[in-house]
Image 1: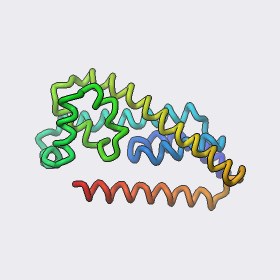
Image 2: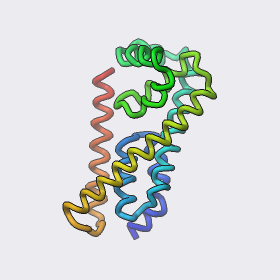
Image 3: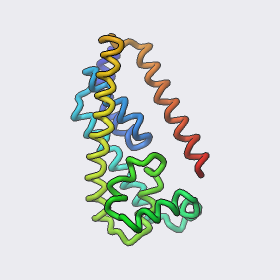
Image 4: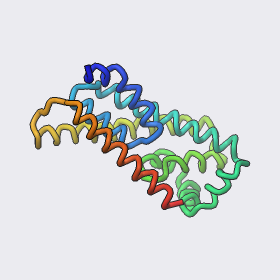
Length: 184
């Protein structure tokens, strides 16, 4: 029954989770694909699409909500000034690479939206980068799943393992939130 729930809703959870959390969900999706509970290409596609949608949303927010205080405060941060310098020197490379740099995923589309880069150009480059990122992080999770299986043998997935994986994801998400607050 539990495996049926994962196979029925797992791809949707990966899609939403990749947009909200990112790396942890993509990685865990790869591990679940390795276990045979999800299909690898579907996990990679859901990861890429979830990331793409979230970044397009942040770009749209940056373009249309620039007058809001939180955007003005965000632009004044050290991380944003550093990101602006990189973006001005390497606009295409920055757009293709920002989601691979920890802590830059949310502020980067906001920053890019405040430049002269067209929405269409961002859409195309964001799509390419999301596909690369989704495939790479999911593949790392898939390969990690192989390493775990080699270390511990093929362990049947039980409810307590899912609880441990959920706790790990919550821990990673909590750490990410704390780190973001610390860097602000």
